[in-house]
Image (cartoon, rainbow, N blue to C red; front, side):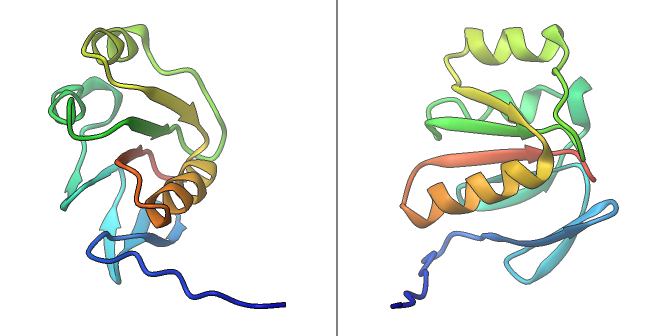
Length: 117
């Protein structure tokens, strides 16, 4: 078996997560958090669509991690994101972390908004 080391370049992968935190690029961040090209920022959760809408045109897909289990996001959040043309995929936060890292390693334009587990 041949192992290949992944080079994320300047991007910041999600390295770990636990109760109420995510370790991103070697630094711990309290949940909820947004990870987008070039920055990591706190997020106000489902009642805070503005920082997600600001990603319009910067990413091809936005993953929303809903916590330990998958859950629907409120229509008041989903509707404006879809109206803005953002591709939104909702999944449990652990799955969102893994999916984000895989697409990031492929050089894709992705972002993730995560609720803590």
